[in-house]
Image (cartoon, rainbow, N blue to C red; front, side, top):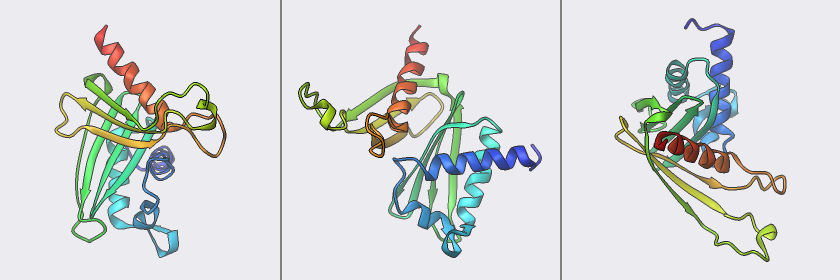
Length: 179
C-alpha cells in the first residue's frame, strides 16, 4: 500500500478511534502529541504506521489506548481483525512495540465485569451497567484483548458508548464461532 490519500485517511481513522475512545486514558493525547498538539510524538507516529499496515484501509470499529506506567496497551478492531499490543518505554526514544493481529473469528472466550447491578426502579437514573471491563481471549495471541470504559455516552442520555458496542460485537463473534 503506497502512502496515498486512502492510506492517510486510514491512519487518521485509527488515530481518531484510539484518541477519542471513552476508554482511552485522558492523559494519552498529551503523551501522543508534541508541540502543543501540533505534531505526533515519534513513537505514536510509528505506532499509527504499524497499525495502518496491519489493518490496511479497513476502517476501525473500535480503538483504545491504556497507559500502564511507562507502557501503553493498544486495542484496535476492524470488521475482520483484532490487533492488540504494547508499546514499552513511552515516551522515550527507546520505545519498543509488540503488535499482533489475528482474525476476529479466532475468539476463544469472553469475560465481562460490569460495575452496577440491575435496579429496575432507578435504571434510567444511572448509566447501567456502569463501567464495563472486557477481556477477550484469542487463538494466536499471547495476550488478551483488554478494554475498559463507560457503557453509556454521558454526553447524550441513553446513547450506548463504543464500549457497549464493542461488548456486543465480541459476544456476536463468540456466538458465530459456537455455531
